[in-house]
Structures are given as C-alpha cells and as structure tokens.
Length: 411
Image 1 (cartoon, helix red, strand yellow):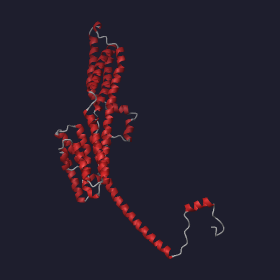
Image 2 (image 1 turned 90 degrees about the vertical axis):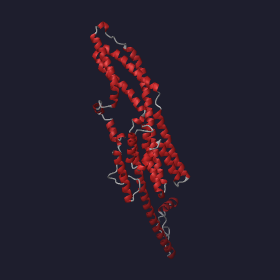
Image 3 (image 1 turned 90 degrees about the horizontal axis):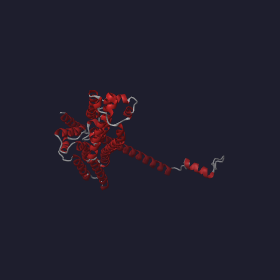
Image 4 (image 1 turned 135 degrees about the vertical axis):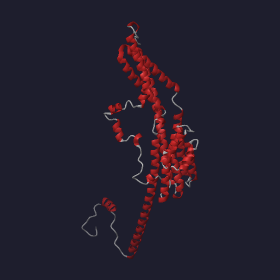
C-alpha cells in the first residue's frame, strides 16, 4: 500500500509539472522550498554529532543502552554458556569433597598464550576494517562519479535535448538504488525485496514505466549503465565530450566491480574459523583456570571476559561485509535528491546567464552609442588634449622628476 501511495504521489507530481509548464520529471518538492525534503543526516556525522560522540558523559550514555545493543545480543549466548560452565565448576567444588575438587589449570600457560590470541584478534579486525573502508570508499566513489556525470549532462546537453536530459537524470537517480539492491539481495530477488526497490525509486521521482523496466532487468546496475551509454551516444555532443562522459560511466562500472569483489569474496574462511575456535577453546580453558582459585568471583569475571573477547571477534565478522552494515538506502536517497537539486540549480544558472547576457548586450549598445557620439564631437570641435592618466603622470614624475613649476609653460 505504501508503494502504491508513493507511485500515485510521483504521478501527481508529474501532472503538476505538466499543468504549470515546469521541467518534466522534476519532483515538486524541488520547486517548493518549504516542502523540499531534507536530507537524512542520521548516518552522517556533523559537528553536533561529533561533539556528542566524544562527550565526557558518553560512557554512562552508552551504558544505558547496553542491554539493547545488537552486539551484546549476538555474543551473550556463548558468554552465558561459559559463565554457566564456571558456575558448574564452582558448584562441583562446593559439593564434592576437597580431594575430588577441580584444582584448575595453571595460569602461566594462559599468560603465554595471551599474546598469540591478541595477535590473532588484531589481524582479524584489521583485515575486516580495511575491507569496510574499501567498501565505503568504493560506494561513495560510485555516488560521486554519478554526480559528476549528471553535472556534465546538465552543462553540455543543449536546450533542444531537454527530453534526453530528463531521461539521463532519471536513470542517474536510479543508479545508486540499483547498485544497493544488487549488493544486498540476490539477482532474482524476493517480490517483497523488489517492491522495496520500486518504492525507493518512486520516492525520488522515477517514472513508473522506468521502474518497471529496471525491475524486470537481470542485472539492474548494468542495465542502467548501458542505458546511460546509449543516451550519451544519441546526443549531439562532440566526440571529445562523449568520450569524457563514457569515461565516467566506465568508472561507475569499475567501482561497482570493486564492490562486487568485496561482496562475493570474504576473508579466507579457514582464518575466520581458526579465530572463532581459538577464542572458544581458550575461553573454556580460562574458565577452568580462573574459577577454582577465585571461587564465586570467577563467574562474573568469565562472563565479562567472554563478552569482551567474543565482542571484538564479532565486530570483525560484521564489518567484513560492509554493505549490510552501511545505510546504503539513505545514502542513495540523499544522492538522488542532490541530483534533482543540481538540475534546479542548472535551470537557475541558465536563467541568470540569460539575464546577464541581456544586461551585457544593453551595456555594449549604450557604450557603442556613447563612443560614436564622442567621436563625432571630437571631429566637429577643436578640443584641448586631455591630461595624461594618473599612472602615466606618476611614471613621468619618476623618470623626469617633479614637473610642478611656477611657470605656466613648464606646467
């Protein structure tokens, strides 16, 4: 129902523009400043969010949301299992005679293996963070290249190619959403997932017929890129400009390939399993080493250490595939709104340029009229020669000294 409502709103926007002779395909919100949708900056840090991020009371603020953390929910079951094991060891030592009690493992062996476990976690998290950074940079590079492509189209396409420009902008606005769907879901896709793509495209002013064409394509980002290339080839641009725009489209496909490599090829699974196995068995042994000498105090200590170690490992696993972690839909919507804003700015600049040209033409006409009148007056009258310009007078004064004299001839 939400998707149908958004499509009806998009169609309503198109009818509004046809009735007011505005540019076709431009969302109504981009014309009305009061109703223009504002960018969702929840995924981006501004100055206020940075101040909140490094505030002195951040520890208490984050501790208040500890139980609702997804990281805690993922690592809590194995941590509870290890704490229950420590509790069972302590109960066994309390029930059975001291001669049969579990004496515990030597802590010296765990002190020697701590360095190995720490290096294993560091290498794992560093590799995952590097993949996360590469994925973020590649996706943002796609959006910036898309924005640069639209800038070229708005600047180079002639007013007679307004329809071609609108189609170019429409498919450019759909590019980011198609890439997001391609990275998050399968190519065929579930009908509910495809409907999510349809709703996202309708929310940024893409026409229903264009949405149907994109939704039925097998590889949607490639289909959009091929359509953009076809629109460039059909334009009246020079070969140099066509080559430049094709270079940007090639950059889009290249960065999409980088995103696909990160999506399809993880860190070697054997290394990930080795890290998980090592942490699990090391934590199991730590429960047998800490609980006998510490007694009941060893149970919460094992729970805390398990949450910390398993949490670090879980963060590395989660950010290894960055696209499920990043708010790609919000980023694409902000980029699409920026594209429509670029079109509005291009129209404003074109109107301003026309006004500038008109003012310049009036000024040139006035100057020519004045110059012609001055030339005719000079030819008709015997006028005194004008004084030299100030810069020439200063140069004469430097070369020949002060020319001021009491004599009228000297002056």
